[in-house]
Image (cartoon, rainbow, N blue to C red; front, top):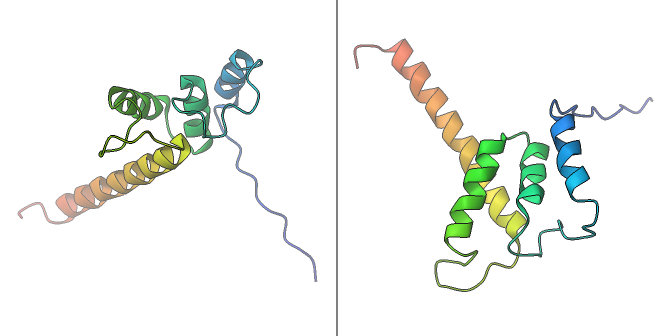
Length: 111
């Protein structure tokens, strides 16, 4: 029995990631998620790796920067990647919802 080879995703934005990586050459282990607030470059790379656009990363960063990287109760955030993953999941769900609503609107134009 032959093992299947894992399919690797080829990101279309490798050049953008390389640019951000070049700006972070002196940063060692700072993009792991525990340094709060993170650098915008780390956030941009993480969002690109998750196949989301740079405006999503920028809006995430600005939103949490406005909240000073604190929770609703005022405690400081411990890991920005957990927040980013929740943000990404919510963004994907909102896109799917809009697609379903558009499909329903096209299928049933009178309602």
